[in-house]
Image 1 (cartoon, helix red, strand yellow):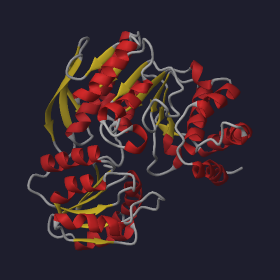
Image 2 (cartoon, rainbow, N blue to C red):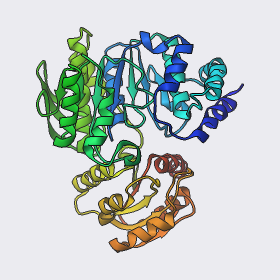
Image 3 (cartoon, rainbow, N blue to C red):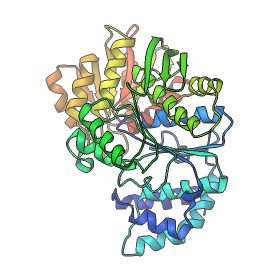
Image 4 (spheres, one colour):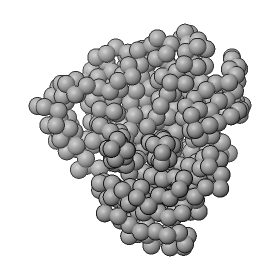
Length: 433
């Protein structure tokens, strides 16, 4: 088996879609000798901000000298982005070796009465086997969807994290914030500390009740930890942080947007919990790790002349944060936009957040089966009375938008991480010319 064959094998499980439940994972882990049992996990759930918070925690631990794995989804450039360790993606040879080793068991579970297994479950099992081989100090472990029935929820973490709660994947997680919070609170384990930046009272009440029932110490933004944002530019922003154990002034990050200060403060609260457990992580590591963090596709500047931004705002919670950042960083500006949105998203609400900031918009569908037909987006956009059209692909939409930019106009590409992934690949080629 070569790398492409391994990817094809993993992708073949995509035909089974998403099947919430832990039975298949537990069956496989039993056959694999429970690779998860010997590892320390920081388990991170939330509607948005999971990836950024995962990267921030990972980088602080790495700066402190620990050997750390980082599991995230989806990927932006290559499948190997999803399974990282030591700041590097899994190499292709290691991935092929793992696929070959697990293939007999993966085939067996798919043919059993509890199968078939899903693509996300396969990827999660590969990650667990990889991290066991490396014998890491920590694994920062991002939830895929929800929490309670997510494939990642087979581990016993040292800290559980819920970044925030918003409406997304309502067909699976529920229609209300309380229902969604209950699903995400499913990662909370007995006696294991929980860190959350959830602000909505209805959702927070669910998390508090779950933590209380399980006697899990709860560390909440605004209570056990706080932060104050100081200043921001396109290059960096800073904030002050305080919890019951420490106070850090003028902490600097290179991620854009007020929401990233909240993610960074949440990461520091996680680190504080680990320090209380006896792990040595000093202030210098906290500052260095946060300052070094980049998270591609999240308010990322691809070019300064012309100014081109990409952002994987893929649900209303994300587009609202993006809108607030645009208003803050570029007051009074209008943007030329390229948007591609997936079918299961609240697209009317997402467009309502973004189109008031648009001078014109081109809708395009990323090469993904769940992409919304651009003609539907064009129809939905009519109420906003913004010049709008469609393009056959994300790349063609970007080419057209770049050709039509005037003066100091800014191009923004957003709507889904699949759109952003294709945009980044194309922009790197175009802007290099």
